[in-house]
Image (cartoon, rainbow, N blue to C red; front, side, top):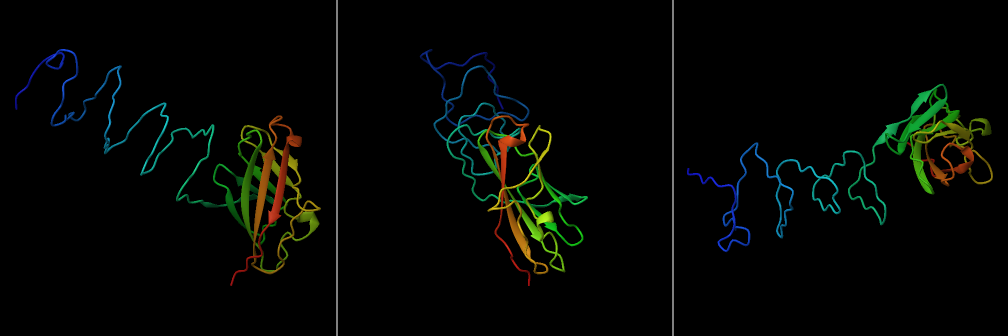
Length: 221
């Protein structure tokens, strides 16, 4: 192998760039650097990891990983092939916590664990937003879990937006504030919570409205 040692390359006319007719190879551990820009009309193939900042458009066939989040300031977001993980609600002392940092779909078994308060935590307090959380409740073997007004789902809800202390509210549903569950043993009720924040102050309970509805009585067996 022979080497050519020069400081700069320029075309024969002395006015432009040289053409790499057969391409170029950068040895392992070496970098291509500079303060200028790279202009390419064709495709770029990268076998490893591409790290970049301040990118306007990304069209990826594979997986794109955002290090600290994605901010969509205009237009629509389309996600294909998305899979929603189903999380078990965190239960303690009749309080069922649905942590939206984990996801937006949760399950809970009412057998020996009746729910007195539903706590929805860590949802973003974005002005004029509407966040939805789905809860799948498995009725107990007697069909008696949370079927009365005093323990109805939606009567007592604690909201804890991201970065804000929690406050208690009652959900809006029809003409009351409860959702009555199926009285059939082992039925599954699908409960949907919707939280609207009007943007007038994240720590004020009056600036939030919580809605709840039941679309369920899905029967096992």
